[in-house]
Amino acid sequence: MADFLVQNCDSILEANQVDVENARKKNVSRAMIDRLTLNPERIAGMADGLRQIAALPDPVGEVISMWKRPNGLQIGQQRVPIGVIGMVYEARPNVTTDAAGLCLKSGNAVILRGGSEAINSNKAIVKVISEALAGTDVPEDAVQLVEDTSRETATELMKLNKYVDLLIPRGGAGLIEAVVKNATVPVIETGTGNCHVYIDSDADLEMGEKIIINAKTSRPAVCNAAETLLVHAAVAEKFIPSALASLKNLGVELRGCEKTRAIFPDALPATEEDWYTEYLDYILAVKVVDSLEEAIDHINKYGTKHSEAIVTRNYDNARKFLQEVDAAAVYVNASTRFTDGGEFGFGAEIGISNQKLHARGPIGLRELTTTKYIIFGSGQIR
Image: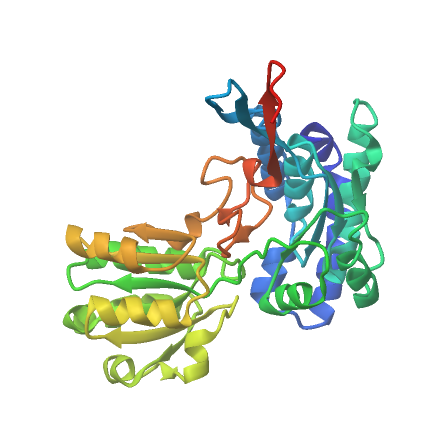
């Protein structure tokens, strides 16, 4: 599949260009255009992700544990495929290859239902994947694309309990809420990312500025991008002018609390709604807090349990943040942008789960398996 992607790069880019032009005509945001756009480097990256998946150990058949009972029974747990996985996602064509690769490697079939914004790109990619599978023992139909992008089709997919074993939505809050509300197929809820970076009173301020710039601007339209910056009052006067000026120069719209605006008047007033918002754009909310405890309380109230970061040189504060922040990924002195299957060594991921059941964080190969008990006996009866 990776080789075929690279070999058919031109045809995929041609189809992608149609999607990008259509998105521009609809005045889609700059960040969303970036999310949709493919180029030779990104296709090479998609292929590299598939090669990394191919090189990973096969989870299927792994015996996780085994123990012996007093009656002589040996009882173990073994990883097995889930079955047929349905993916409902928005305007990110790279999800198509990530989902196909991870599902096939973990022994599953996958039904892909991408958004209308990327339909031409997805058709081209799945055509290439099918051609690649034709030369293997894997059935070509193990990867299928639903080409009808209407809401009715998506809703029908969500209710196919007889045929689909698991549904994974990947996209904005609206998409995920719609799937959770309408699905009768079991769902792993991937996360909206209202992510925070907290600059502690004992932070390395130069490091903190680099981290928030990366977390906000490297790819604003992805779920692990930072949406809120929290700054301890003890360092606000030093940190805010430089950091916010740098962010503004990079095109970020800043929305601040009263204390923030007193230090950086160019920031717009932040509303209560801003603290809850996943912008997925060049917008950042900024709040000055009086303590580590206030920062943690703010994150646990307004965050979406996705990815949260503290910048600090204080070991005790770092430990407290790690223990008390409720999120799938909690960072000390690093950007939230690392919450990613590739960055975690999974090759790729099918989404980031911020729920607490079964899978949490990047969903890789192991999270796409379930288990069954295997029992060895020698004639035991009960």
